Length: 569
Image (tube, rainbow, N blue to C red; front, side, top):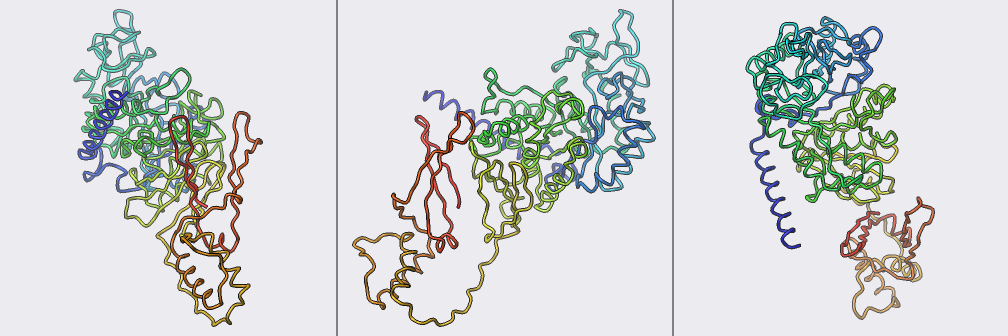
């Protein structure tokens, strides 16, 4: 056991050193002025389509033009567009003649117009690019569909030799190939030259600012890094969708291996792109679905997703055209977030590290525009970048509480609570409830308010002994018990002196002397089947309760492990 523990500690030390190196080296090639995109600004992206948008009557680009004022009002800074090129499948993810920018979403002229419209409104535009595979227009001499058409008329040399279905004459692949279309050989110079030419056209002729790299597992990240360096987008984000760690059907609490694979891909891409944070999506879904909010904190008290390991490279999301529910929910049903927990999920990603993304279907079809707008406005008001400071104060089976601010010196702060507990920060400390919903609440404050000036004291007549007894009896249970102290039975002068001492001591935080007879412990059997709620009650006089703050620490033993739960009242 000792050897295993040492091995784990060494592994954590190595991971910590890798993270420090990442922070030092940065990965700034795709950003401006040597600063990673989102490190000095508040950015929120919206996916501007769903799986069915290609079938919209009148064209999707025209529909986005109509929705542009509402999208601007939402407060997002980046709009993600679908693949714009000719495609065998209407959604655009089976690209064919990539130089033809006429698709089921609309014409090239419409595309230029809608991109220009969003940019004139101060938003950036991201284009979805499919670089891993391409559909051929003709068969080669060997009968395989590997002869491509259009301006970039490649032959079977552009297809990897170990393609599972199309058997090209290129080099061996550098990733995990698909079997639905020819997998492109990015080691060929003519392929790299033509892809760079095409990306430059999207950047400069159409006006796109950024790229999404579809199915980034299909080829090595170094080619993505090369394309980014050659075409210089504002940023790029890769879809490195890898399976999480499971024991049978049980998702492991520790997903360090999963998020490390995402980090490894970004490293391999010369640290140029960002990556979609599938680790956070998985952990957050499980936490919200089951109430296992402890999943949201790792062993270093950081967020447990990729956004806790490398926040400036993480792009967080709830659902997209792949994962969202099928049919009217706008996705393909591959991995949908629990429908009744979607706003809990958004409350988390819109207040936490990484660049958050909202899904078109949630904004418009689910009518969540107003709720998401409120959260986005808070993120902007708090000036949160992709790498804010997060202090997780609670993460257990009863809920999640975290305080977030731009940096350690920022006076602007927010509290996020997930779960249905009654906890709330003190209004007297400047906290204001800004938005809330089913299982979430967000408070903010801008600095700690100065204490109020004491009001002038009006001379009062000497209190009667009986009245003094009542005042001191209210205060005394909260004061340290001195050895040899007797019960209150003294002349009025001594009582007044005791009152003065009590007032001075009451200004200092002191332990509460609990009368065991006043403590009530009961079990609530009205909870869900298989669960019990243990309720601890202790009565205090309202005179004290109105002026005091309490922190209760409960230690719960589970086998040989002890967990401390902290509750503020």
